[in-house]
Image (cartoon, rainbow, N blue to C red):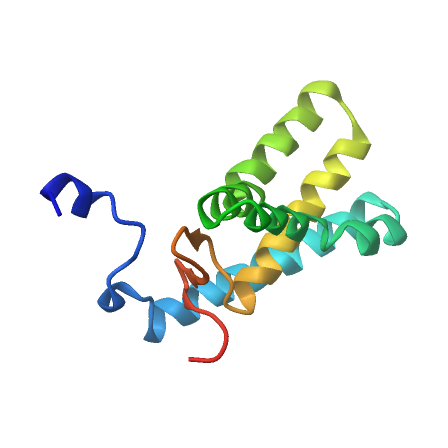
Length: 138
């Protein structure tokens, strides 16, 4: 294997798994985002039914895994990064759309919820390998 091929590996070395206090802090950050998103959503007076109905919608991005692991990880990560939620929020502000803002807040809530329970962005080698460490049974 060439040095270039080794550098673009999608498999994180096991020593880079987030453990200890940094992992706890990342999970607490997720919990904080989740709670703040819920509070903002309630404060805005948006529909609880919409929140309940869309909270798990970002997980539909995992359907990309039906194509292959690389597409699955890419589609999952796009739907599960705060950058995407922030861009949806920016779109809501630019268009002055309360509906789009509600969706952005729900996206933040979903990502925060996932981080709080230890789910992170996926590596292309396995659905269980994330930036937060390995998920599921070890």
